[in-house]
Image (tube, rainbow, N blue to C red):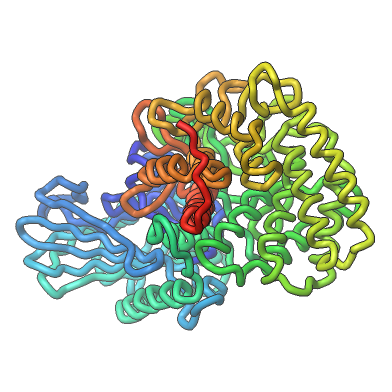
Length: 627
């Protein structure tokens, strides 16, 4: 069973793909060459799906790597500088070992070019800094979700694999023993000595790959650190609560971006469960229009908005003529703009902690979710100054999105949580259609269609009246999940965040109180909703929703409550400042795909909202927080 805690993983990215490295020094997840490619190593989801470890051995003659705390070794880890280059230090009575891991960035990539030319190569360097340390290397590739057990052969400078449609080149100066579809070896390093490895994937029928000599590995590792530093210098401008964690979240959000298209994945993993044994196991390695639009706003706060135009160009290209033909805007795409994301189960993988099924693809691509129009327009409005004069394709796409919201707001859909049940008149979808019209009216001049502003304004008012009449439930004393429902939904917290009602509106304040009272666990973490879907087993509490509670409290001037919720929720970050999607209410463990863009976005925007509210307080405004 694959059971390394989700929190015990580090995240690497080259803005093209990603890897997860365990605290024990094992790469247990790596997809090449893109985020949504099939994994080369997948032990995250099954013990037999491949891994690649570099770590101290228990002793020089041992054939196993030491887990943290075993064999007299303890480990600590951190990111080197403001980026995603991992440094793990192993300390024992006999010596100390430092391991550096990174997905290489291009040799001359700096600033806004980060990731555009990344070579898709995993680099690892181990160096003994004190005494002597026996180092164990295990290379067990299992491409295509573990279906391929490749043949391994020695070549000058390393090992090469053959099997399936790809080859893998492992460049190393360690002598490895080949045994079937695995290569292993142990070498003792003395103080000042080191080893390097580089892993690259190529086409089985393409040009031969060339080994990476140690000097090139070390040079590119240093260059990758410098590349991340240059990006951070241009982007990290936020000053406010949780400054370092917000800055790091900006780095993580950038790491979840596919630089060549501007698309952003929701998470770099698939099938990490939202509840143990729940069946809630989804593939998040794609670009949701809503998630990516909101994440772009997070980058605006935590970093800088220079990537805005690239993202909107991606959306306009990916959507093509969907809106012009009267079709719904597809809610999600592949990172290259692909539309068919058909979902399939992978029955030979057991899943993390036996919580299957493991899935590739996501059937939600066929769903109708009307909130996407508001998400896109809200992001465009936030970044309107940076977008400047819009190119014709982007302008037409944004205008068509406003028109689609105006035409379809009264129809039913699956809602923000993608509930696989009947379509309903979800409040959040109506609200975000109102946002699309509201932002469209505000941007009418920039969209070069001022003649449409009056009609958009009328429709905006119709939606507002509908929400106030049908969305409010007098019996519950709150806005509820969908028209006529008695169920609460945390997505109602967006009402003050998007400015639907004045900050002091009693219905809005009552809804915040109702969500905090009825949808939280004993630690104050927020559930999305309770029940109401096709799964018998409950999920965990939702980090984004808890951050949105902090945001909503700040937006309504309840500063002290907002700070309490924000700081408590930020404490759910791992030692490396990473958030998953959910938290197990019983154990406090992280659940769901990891790291999760939505959660990092929630932290960033809530922190900025709190900073703004505290600034307003310092200017003399009262804190209307109620006991």
